[in-house]
Structures are given as C-alpha cells and as structure tokens.
Length: 185
Image 1 (cartoon, rainbow, N blue to C red):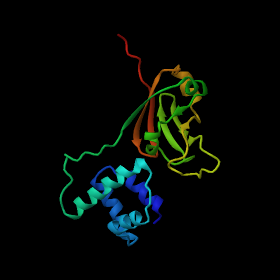
Image 2: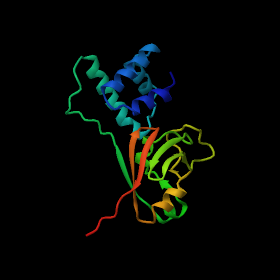
Image 3: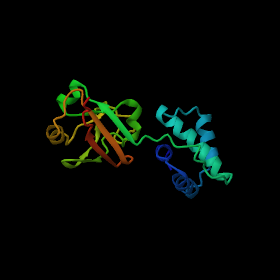
Image 4: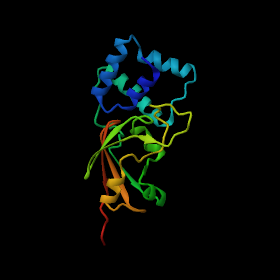
C-alpha cells in the first residue's frame, strides 16, 4: 500500500467504522499501524500540516479500538461539513471559487473530477491552478475550481462580496454549492 493511500485514508477518517475499514486494509497488506507510524517518524517524514491532526486522531482512535474501548462522544471529530467563502473581485469576474488553503484537503487531488450539486443541475469540475511540476492527484496542488461554473454564476447573479457555501456530501466526490442568501436588517 502506498503512503499516499494510507495518508489519504487517514485524512478521510470520520468515525470508528472508517478506522475499522482502514485497519482491515492495513491488515490485508500485513502493515502494522504502530510500526508504520514509527517508521514514518524515524525517517523524519513530514506529514503535510492539514493531515497532521488527522494522523494524530488516527493514532488515538486505533489505540482506543485496540484496547476495546468505544470512542466516546467526548472525542468528537473536528470534521468540517460546510465551508463559506466570500468572493473576491477576481473570483467573481473569472467565475471561480478559490479554496482557502486550510480547506484544500477537503477536496480531491489536483485535476481529479468531483461533482457539485447546484440549482442549475450537477456540475463536474476539478481543482486547478497548480504549477507545471504538480502531478495529477496531488492533494496539496491547485487553488480553485472554475470548470462548468459560468452558468451557475450567471443564474445566481453572483458578484464580488457574495458568500458561496460548499456543503460536503461525500469528501473528495460530491458537494453542494449555493449562494448564501443576503441578510436583511
């Protein structure tokens, strides 16, 4: 199993079921979680910042599962389910949604397609705006998505200063995109 897949799986953890699935995958490939984590630390492997917390969470969950203790509700997952982004002049002009760096790991790898559910139908798009050296699938590469958004921007009269909301339906696969309604005083 490649390190990339392990880290991706760890990043996607959402609960005990996901941990158990990951443990089965590791067991299938005869990989001991503690040995793997120790090895990665011994070679001074630097986990990208957004993943560090998820790997730490994985370590805690694995320990809890191995000890037979249920994961308590007092240990909630800090999973983000909704993102609000205020559009800049450039983003509105070019009909794109710029993903803040801290939320980038919630989206699929560079140039990997995903689906947006919108009020104008489903839109298949992907994260773009990387560097020439970026590889397709790189979870850290790219900054925004734009493909297929023109009709949505026009239909919703999206402009500079508007807030768009992205709800995560299925991480790395499916999201809901809508314009946050303006508040009236």
